[in-house]
Length: 290
Image (cartoon, rainbow, N blue to C red; front, top):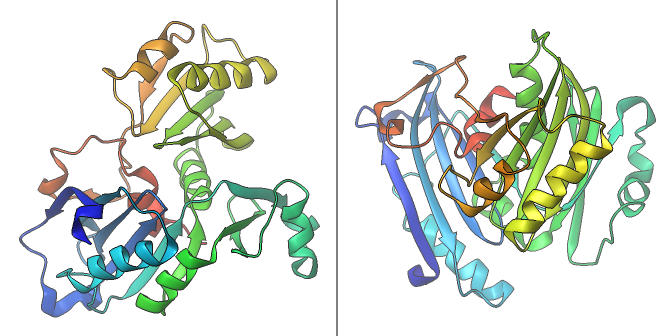
């Protein structure tokens, strides 16, 4: 099964103690394309470990379960007990509802207005206190069941929830206008637009080519009546300056930067060789009160 899960990185602080994991927080991120997790040392307020895998060649739910089960059972860290465990599941089926309009009795209707929901999906929601809104989402039931089986005490959230909440927290005292964040993943990317400390826009886009990537970003900039010559675009996730996505986007948008790490906590030396803007949502999940 391990040939179906390619290890991307494994970095753990030598000071981590497997006999005292009750002082660590465990954060997980799972999608049909991969799995990653990190450890946060609450006593030192320090991110101290990160491991990531890419899934490949998996053709069935049963095979996916087998690969995931093998990863967990073979891990030196994932069968231990932690002070808390939270999980992120990636899914394109998500919609934001203002808190005053949210009704738990009509949760299906909130989501089905924007997305098709099948019998293979589980519908849930996250409350976003900083935004005063609710993220209603659907994820494959198979992913939910895997998380609940191996981590029964885990709180499970949608990928967009900690992304939006953490960016709002980072910008709570900001007074310098519009900022457009682009979080890049393998097949999708998220756009978050903040005006000072207010959310103006959020959406997720599926892209199949480098031109798709640039087109959707330019389209959003135009629809929001922003100036591509002056708007600040901040990139994070699976992208770098030497990628084709960046090169094409830079033809149309000039003020492009990469997100810096949060200064609200510390980072172990093992993060020195990891780009600051990678694994952002996973690494910042612990700071969100979802």
